[in-house]
Each structure stands twice: as C-alpha cells, then as structure tokens.
Amino acid sequence: MPKKDEKIQDLQDEFSRIQEENKDIDVSKYLAKREDHLPDLGTIQIYDYDKDVDESKVQANEVLESMVDLYLGDYPDLVKHKYVQQKMKEDSKVYADTLFLQKMTKRNFLTQLRQVDNGDNSARMHEVVNQSVSQIRDNIKFSQTQRTEFEKFWKDMRKDLGLNELSESMEQKNQAVVEEENKGNIMDSRSLNEMIDKVIKGKT
Image (cartoon, rainbow, N blue to C red; front, side, top):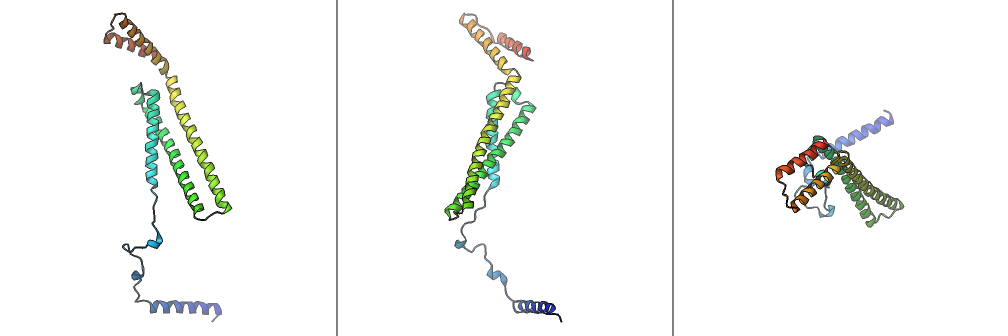
C-alpha cells in the first residue's frame, strides 16, 4: 500500500477510535447555559441601528415640516397640495439619510478613540482617526449645504407662485381697511371678503 494511502488509513482508524471511546460523553454539560454567569466575558451590547434610523426620520420630518410652514404656512390649501406633500416627503427622506450617516460616522469615530485609549497607538490608527475627523467635518458641511438648498427651493416656490406679491397686496388692502376704520368708516366683513376674493382671482 502506498505511503499516502497508509497515512489516510491511519487517520481514519484514529478518528474511529476516538469516536468509539467518547460515544457516551454528554457534550451539553460542557456548554454554557443561559443562567450561567460569565463575568469574565464582559457585557455584550447590540447596537440599535433601527432606533437611529427612526430618530433620523422624525428629526428630518420636523425640520422639513417647519421649513414648509415657514414659507407656505400662510396658504394652508397650498401646503396640502399633492406635489407639495410629495416633495416634502422626498426631501425629508434625503435629509434623514444624511442625519443617519452623521450618526454612524460619529459612532465609528468614538469607537476608534476607544481603541486608541485601549493602547492601539499605531501610526495607521492615528491616520484612521484623522480621516474620520475629516469625514465628520465634510458631513457637517454637506448637511448645512443641503438644508440651504431645501430652503432655497421652498423660498423660490413661493416667489414663482407670486405669493410674495399677493401677501403684500393683501397687507396693503388690510392697511387700507384700518385707515378707513380710523376715519370712522367701518368696513363690514362681507366687503372685506369681496376685496380678498378680487385679489386672489387677480392672481389666478
């Protein structure tokens, strides 16, 4: 029998012998149980990423809703328009992703700092930490730029729809009403409503 085949046969025989000798061993008694306390292993923490995702969505929704309310809040019917609602939802989703990435970058950075505190002072580790600092800085800048672009969009929408001029016109009409009242000529609510209708129809 060739030497190679002899070695294979010897290994198979040894494996069979070990199995035969230990066939009555109860392996379960050597395994840790749920009720066992293993302090030497430390506390295992599972990070809740879903929580961060949900919190980012809530935060983004609050920012976008307040932004839309700032620029279009004086026209509630317009805020309810399908396009406005869809655009607000899309912007909120994009901003939520940005916020989540910021959180993950910061979490990664803190993990790296803990590694340094635990003795990992290699040149490569310090290079990684510096890269993370740069990434956090870029994320902050991108987030600010993104918010500015969102604000510009909603501000331009108000301007494109002529809402600024309409608001100014209505303010002028209201001022005229106040002046008339100060003169002793009280304008009733019906006349005021007719005046507002004329302004709105003039802009449609």
